[in-house]
Length: 377
Image (cartoon, rainbow, N blue to C red; front, side, top):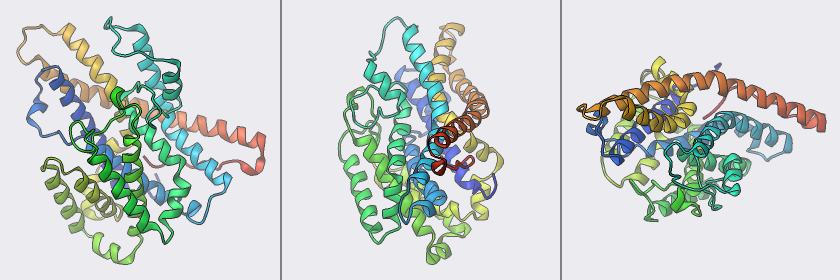
């Protein structure tokens, strides 16, 4: 992509990969299995989703701030939302449909949960994690749902971020994140609030997303400051910020501190120093960034399918049979995500953009959204 800042794409890919490792380890431990991942400290993996939220706000501000910082008009808002829907919906629809088919077939013989018509509508409309009482079908899709809420509010949020009230927005974001952390609803850590069955009426996942999304908006505005550029554009800034982040991850319960450091890591990557390019813009990490959304959505169902297949194929008395589990999931998820990116994401995005352009053109030629190419997370 022309003018793309590869380290920002790469860090998203690395985060998606770490989320996958976190879920593989969690699944194995829940089933009292053993994999080589048991030796790795991955309990903080859920915080990579917080990086997604901050990065999303930053990249969307980078791409769309000029369109909305002075106000919002319908054609621009329509164009923005078409781009967002085209970006997230094709893969989400396919994965959700597969989860629903899996529920209908009921391979295990016992339904873990029941789905109502309301649940189906809320999930397919991607509003299931807004605290509206819907059961979530695809576990990790809660973050996609809450991001859709942030997208819908984006013109207002970016307008505030470029006004004199930006300090109040940042303060409110920090307070909101802190409220999530002290809610005692976290599972693996203070911010690990998820919109599963026990939390389906909770607004905490959405509050977590909105607060961190706004931190990303504020971080982008800060990155335009000349003093910030002088301080954060060198190799040292990337290395120091990354070291601080890794150090905080080693401290249990440091979720809020980690989230407050993430914007500075993203700013340092945005300046695209040599260290940024080497660490996060190299070919392998950048490739993961391109397929990160598909990797994030697909790996959940692959974990379950591969686990069931291995239980059937491998002898029950084979020592450390589950050592095969993690590598199998990683390889399968990479291949499926790569195919999904090329066949579903890219093509689906173009198709949805074309359909919306045609609809808007029929309704009002002056309101046709001018959709752009492949963009942010």
